[in-house]
Length: 580
Image (cartoon, rainbow, N blue to C red; front, side, top):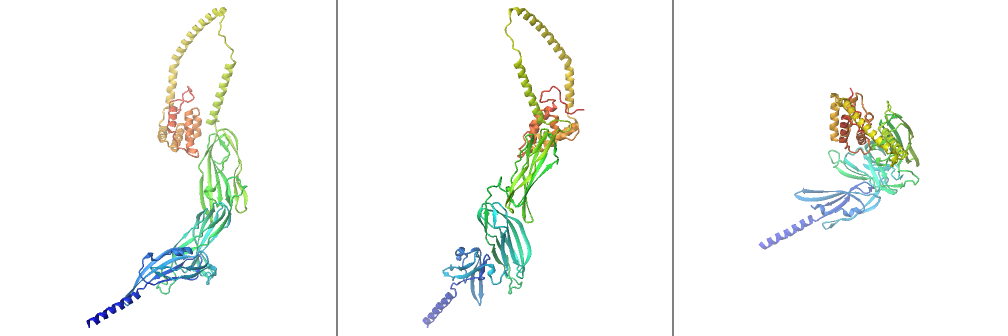
């Protein structure tokens, strides 16, 4: 009896284990959420197993040969029905086909189980059964598929979304391409459009496409990744759970032509280029030593800032030139990128006369007419006059001094060359005359020396009085001390801008009239050390590279020498800085 009962229990255990084994047999199913699918629009591949499996049990590697593989999500769930528990593992892979045709989802091996293959059909959008009644699609166009190297093209991508489908989020990835510069020029712009009786919300973005090499190039289409909710009759809210979508724009081929061989100068291709000039102050009559600023404004459509050439005008030698750094500005107007370049030059005339500035022109290639054109500023005549009072510029005075000195030296050499030769021999008959002449010369020298000493003693008090007067004239008055102290501090710090302002304030306090650097040059034109220090200060303020000013010490030493009544031309006439 006991043996039969034991055998019965063993048989039940074997049967229960067999049933449990059959219930836990691994099964894997594979399906797609739609078939056929539309080219460049994502669809979902769902792989489901009836067991709790690890994430790495499924690999999407075999799909990469025919599809663009997006994100893969995994979901694990457990259900208990009538006391029996079941577990499920599901993988959802987002796939996109870039070309139409017939494709096969290959079988997968998951934990020893092999799935079945699935055949799918990828069709063009206009071949779908519902026409354009898709919930969303992406379109891209380019302004021209044939262009010249460095010619800007406009790439426009439009995202169509059915108005009744909520879009919870999304992002647009810019197009790509080798040897192509791509820059977004407009943000999201929205409009409404009716397509085959269905209202769509259309989001548009535009990109500037600039090919950098001639030949056949390709633009890889833009991509949209988003999350939306479709309609659902099972949900209380009327919408299903969020789903991801990926859309691709079609690739576009470009045929890029090289620069024409007959084009002169730096290559510039555009649809419109202009050049203008501005003068500050606006006058064609200039004064010697008075600065004036000339600004060239170059404007071009569809050009990057680095593509604009810099004119290289020819300046007369009598004009001192201080070019500034070019300033570039780029902005978008009515969907077109506009680039401007401002090139300013400070001009200081150094000599009276009439000068012709040659015309300035820039060659450019008109992309519309396919012709070479020129943007041009006509030649300009400048008249340079002396400032009121007829004070010549320091440079002109320096040139005059050099010319006078050279002429004086030449006359001295000519005089010495024409001097009669002297004889070193004296005859015996003239010895007595020589003794008499020598005696008279000694007597005359003694009288002359005595007279000079007497004159010096009488003139010493008068000279002392003159020096005292000059020192009193160079004594800094109360109203000029603040500006002079400020000048000393800024010179010690090598602060060029503030030193120039303090220098002008000191000149105004000294003379009682508004001051300019030109007036300073005229007032102290004879002091070479001051003029040199002022030249160095001007170069720091007006030159293109704007070097760091290190001449503060030299300028202050020149100011000190002025207050000590010294002049670099060794003149004995004392200098009075503060005349009463």
